[in-house]
Image (tube, each protein chain N blue to C red):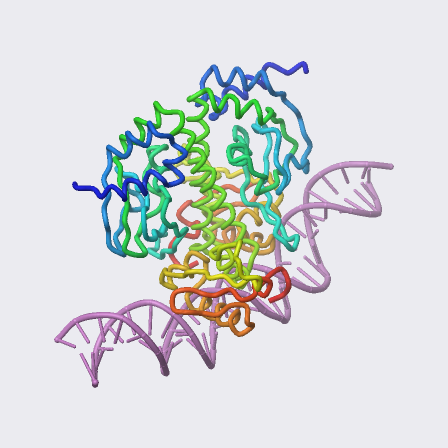
Length: 231
Length: 231
DNA sequence: GGGCCCGGTTGACCCATATCAAGGTGTCGC
DNA sequence: GCGACACCTTGATATGGGTCAACCGGGCCC
């Protein structure tokens, strides 16, 4: 009940609510609550029709898919500021994926009904929704291309490069890519086994392209990451 | 210039325009034209900012991705009724993919500016847009899961099963899956080489699950398609 | 109608990555 | 501080599917 104001301010400042405008944001914020949840918590489950939408304030969430045999993988890893379940909410369909917290997190949760009500009446929320979906569609397309066209080395390299801030002050191009998620999760996201991820990171380090640390990697030589040239 | 009325009626009856409502549909229809284009035509090119949106009336369009080395693949194959370039239009970003006709086709083409104008003012078009994007997002997620979790045999089997009408009258479960696209295109869509696709289809046929024809396959035994059991 | 060309199939081989199996190493509870 | 466990890495082997090359077969043009 007693929600910390800073949490709600954080929610307001997320890209999604920023795009949705004051009116819609106010209505949605009033309808929801902020909660802290532990690593491993399953927020929604593949095949179930969700009843709450989630905005991640802090932490990390993985979208997990399970096939008919019970094998599972991570389709995407999202960080703070992201909103989930919009497609299921919009299409009134069961979730395609489960949402699992990869670290202790803080979330803003709003009832799906409230979201749909505001979506129907507020054009700016509709706009925020289609912009969000367009962005997420592009993320998935990028990943399909990655899986079809690039080998393990290039996939890992691209993943590291995208995690490291581009405009780094260091002229050497040194930048830090945080990797707080378990290796297993990152490997699944990249469509490979943890063993292959480990070996690939080792190779990159031995070439001097990166330096591996506890919870991340320093990128020492961006051009040394596995590019188009044979790896 | 002289647009055939039946073409425009066809456009009106597409799921997208049906969801967009009369007003928006009328405005968009007036702003665009119907054109016939030959197989192989590139409607839009990866990296370029598009200026027209396309609605496929008849034929087949492939979304092609090319990586930094010039290798390319097909991310998705779409049939009549589908609308393309919505994400690029919405985000005002260059195309992530090229659009190539896989067969002679008829298209309705409307200027992107018109689309954006109506999108800003008509809530029903906004709704059609986010429903379209939500659906397309789910298609891409499904494909990522396919690529990460299922082997070639299962991918081909799922592809055939989805192409064949579910509610078939024949109690044997016999149904026809049309495969008008070149094998090369289908193989790329499924993330494999034409050779592997050919061998996999051959295997399915030798098991009596399908019968291969000129431009399609009859599914003789749905349960004989490669399922969870070892292939 | 005959030859040519292109998409498709078939076969032999190979490689990237999965799989299986130990062996580290840091962290957390006691 | 010490044990134990979880996570990660490293090593050896197996394999699915890619690659390369030869071989169809059918459509099309002359």
